[in-house]
Image (cartoon, rainbow, N blue to C red; front, side):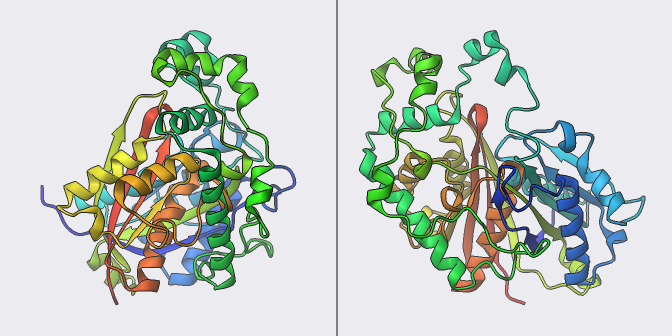
Length: 399
């Protein structure tokens, strides 16, 4: 078996809507969100969809409207023909980035020539934990695995790392400020496809202040007192007590969104009249203690950089899913990634986390930002439940 280069050829997404019945995408099913993007992809690129070898989408809650192999259903409804396959992938919050990683690996291994990867999540219509797996609902599994809520894991990490409330709030303000500035500067305009007139991430909280953030109550104290802290401390007694320091202002808001990334070989790109925008150099998965949970994304980043023979200082852009402020501060400290390189246009605390779609959004935005600033290397990464993480490394390609 030979290997060959694989390229990001195009990327588009919906804006992120509030993950509630008040959100601007709630009226559309997750399948319809994907179909709308599939139509937009064909319109933007002039691509013959019959050339697409597979569609792999991340979905973190595969039940109800997000069950029954949504990607295959969407391909059929989009008119892409009977011969375009589809498959759903679930690596929790890292599903979308893993869909890109696995699709890239298949292209590199000559299984595919031209393929679509990405993800979708309609939290407003298919609530978190609605798949009702044992990791969420079986008391014995929860006890034996140490399955805790992500917010408790975030507070545990903050406690163990020693991050103070004002440090967490400062990061929350920073990401909101950067997100608002990026939207004002048109940094997201190229990628976002308007859906029924909705064309901007609606969770950005303009006018956020440190004083306002400081006034917010801890978001997870009651959950901790109800038994989650006990599970966390059974695994990490060195914490002494879980200090609940994260609020809704320093936690990722739930969102509805979809994103698609077109991947292929250079030959497939040329045959379709497309210019490669970035080369996918490597990907890495990682796992860690399921109670600590949220550090695996950073471990995947460190792993993929080392795999490519690079150093953190070689990376021009890090798009790292903001799974709570504490993990972002840890990432910045350990990798030396300052505000100009890590999430330079804001992140999921400001704009929302649409589980299955988030990783594809981050990968696409990483490519966009590399072109914006003329950088060479970028990494996108997400941490997920049960201590999972995935990272993808790309290199900018100029047409």
